[in-house]
Image (cartoon, rainbow, N blue to C red):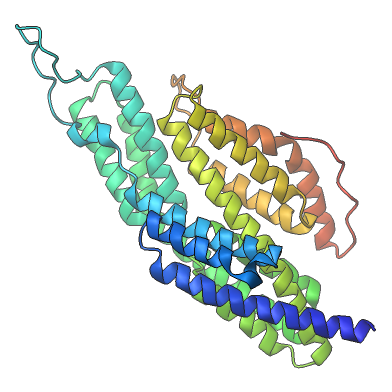
Length: 361
């Protein structure tokens, strides 16, 4: 009986993989805009085999969510900056409405908005968009030098100049992780392979420009191919199936967090859209927390690093605090010590105690 269950499980996993690749390819091929993406996603969800497999549904929903986030990022604009260097129009003697003057409040709002946009692109290693955002910041500085911190802008110029070095360093790290994962799979060292795959999974989900889909799929295939022993190969397949399911949740959470960030910097915090985005963020965190604690540990540590790297502390004298960062850090702060403990114990190759069931919403 156990052998039959194993065979059925392997068949289900293989069929799920085939369906996922088929529908994912169609989503990526046809989803050129949001309406078309919605149509293809609906077609995938209507597939009887997809409807019968909740895990496959989640994988496809996450794939569509990742593409949707990319489409949204491509179309994001900052309308207020289109006339950043235009001088304020003179007051009309007839009393007609004139374009808004660049008050200090408006400059401050535009500066904060562009600051978030720049950091968002910087942590994703999207150099062209980071450069475009910084160019608009420099235009704002040129137009309003008394209200924009030139030293802070200079620090961002240096950070962008070093982006290539940081990217090269991370790419080297990914190369080593790939080698470690494949070699561990070849030796049957499933714990080492799992740790390397977890780290690769978070890089793939949060920095896809460094580890795109095709390359990550090649790593997975190489791990299975490297496992010559049949028992080791089954274990490698099970590991990758487990990683794929959780990686789908990681991508979904990354999409929700990015959406929350976009809404938080463009919407009043008492607006319904902001409250809805904040609710979805907390729901996503609660859903991911239900997964395997080791995978979740890797995810949270990566997200914390992402937040701390991408959003520098406010410069002295800056009073406005980004509500998004407060919300995210409040949800993650109490988990950091617990997760670091789990990671330390995992490195000792010993089982970790179950984390306390406290709420962090």
